[in-house]
Length: 139
Image (cartoon, rainbow, N blue to C red; front, side, top):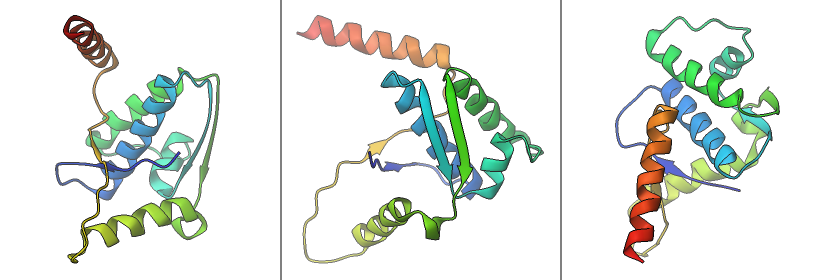
């Protein structure tokens, strides 16, 4: 299931990789999945998740710990490094972004979800519950 997200603030490539990872895991958990295959093109992030590399930057440690907490909620997880040139789906999404951001005379409508993944779980569930309650009240 291809999804595209736009991060609204500047950040490092490693933060982008963690954001994509976190959003994907959160979506899987929201769908009730218990098994997940994770393929990433960031050697650093994948090897940190596999605990082959340490996490030495404090700002990445927050993402790592949150990802680990999310992964613990799954029964079975397979994690593998896959270079972008070997992953046609990721490459296609990246190329689509480049094409869509180029000025041209055609109007293209693409729905983009703007979201940051790193939110403590207890806050996220409370927020989701409030949103659901508001939807029920408005119907």
